[in-house]
Amino acid sequence: MVAAMSGLDIHYNVGDGGHALVGRRVPDLDLVTAQGVVRVFSLLRREPGVFDIAHWVDRVQLVDATYRGEWELPALGAVTAPSAVLIRPDGYVA
Image (cartoon, rainbow, N blue to C red; front, side):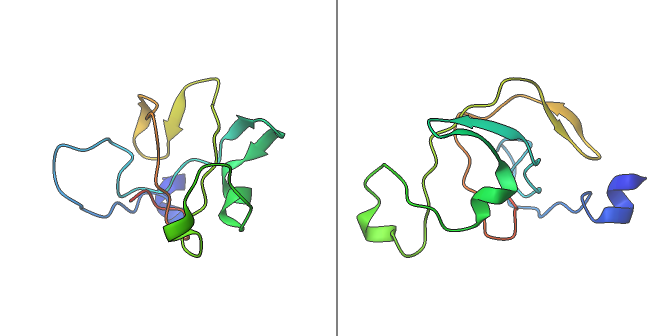
């Protein structure tokens, strides 16, 4: 119910066979980075990365981070943590 009221139940159909997170908003988790703990949605602001993304530097931000815990998605529940996530600027997983 809360997910529907906040719009977090919206799921974009991007095909079958992918991770449950694809097409949904990424949860606002506390990620552990070399610079300390940071919230996912604070990373939607432009920050420099350490991986060579020269060809995409004006469009992509790389963040090397981990999360300690279970991924909980609104309206879906617990899912297996992905090894990598490409997050659109609006917070949805591509």
